[in-house]
Image 1 (tube, rainbow, N blue to C red):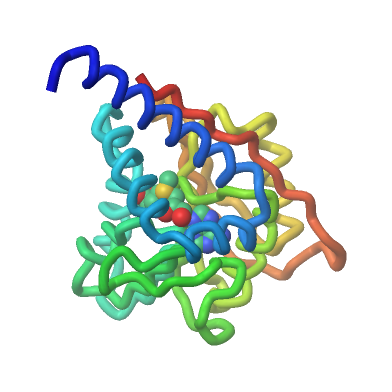
Image 2 (image 1 turned 45 degrees about the horizontal axis):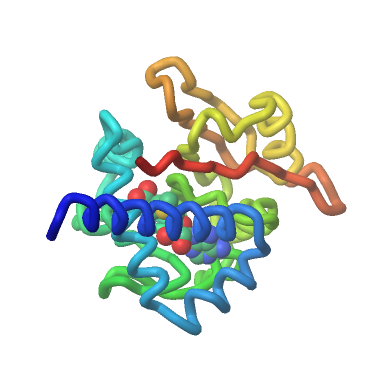
Length: 220
Ligand SMILES: C[S@@+](CC[C@H](N)C(=O)[O-])C[C@H]1O[C@@H](n2cnc3c(N)ncnc32)[C@H](O)[C@@H]1O
């Protein structure tokens, strides 16, 4: 293919990725779920472009979460909320891992909107959100994680640093939603932040407005 055509195609892909990304970060998850379910090829294309993006990063931040979870006993039950192509489950084959995403891109994934996952109450040791806190209704996901986590169950979040207007505000809202933050690692990497929390009693009886800024990747 001639160079000019290649460049044009790349720009088209970048535009598509940016547009879809914006939709994922700014809409309610039920809208995104409708979009992906009505045309799973959009989801496949999104992930193809997302993988290209990951390859440009010096490290995949999910690998740090995986290496920590690897050390836990084999009987540990893990729920990967917004798992993508389920790298976590494919790597940790000796653990019980439930993987959820809008669309099942392989046999490891259960398709659903993660505001309602098909797991019973208090059955999970660790809930993971790796770059998956997308959409308007973040507190629905965190509440759902709280429902499925065992007493003193763990929460692991990895997100892009620039999405946080105030980490301490995010941490206090997590506490209102029933998660006591034990550790925030924002120094070992310039781009990502890792949060570790433990399940406690939910403090807020009403809604909690948990927010992050949209993550707008620069696709070049
Ligand atoms: C940026 S990808 C990261 C994938 C994977 N966790 C990783 O670290 O490689 C975020 C994923 O979260 C999923 N996701 C976001 N909101 C979701 C929701 N409400 N229900 C199910 N999946 C969701 C997206 O579909 C996407 O596959």
